[in-house]
Image 1: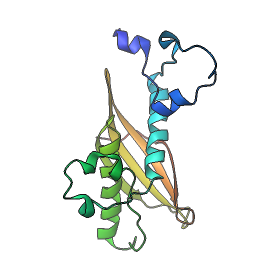
Image 2: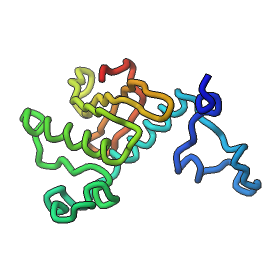
Image 3: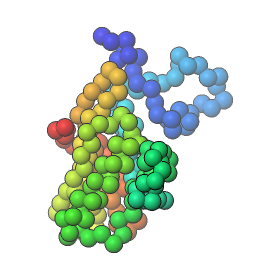
Image 4: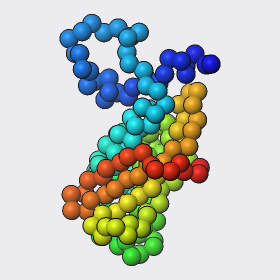
Length: 167
């Protein structure tokens, strides 16, 4: 077995910051390691935070600044106010915007694909399916997340998908 697999995966920054025992002496060896399933949950939490952040500037506005597209200036997604879900071009634009945000700001996810799913059980929410390849050495695994947008609050909730995606 690979030594990295035996040790597990490092938690993300927020998991490190929200320590349950902040007064204890830091010991790098004692730092909690994540297994692959915990890592996927951690990625879902990070994707949810990304989708619940709104960009202050459009790609067009930042176009003259070559490094800005991958900086904190482009963190989050565009507001979709004014777009119509009955217009296929607008639906494609929304999905593409989410894909780009994830590709730019979560380097663990590759080949990201986002589709808008028809939710026959609810007319008050939008459901997106996110499929990607999770790449964290030494792991490479297809992952799927379900993102639910509540239009009234403009808040997303992201959970691991019920089915694995084809990447």
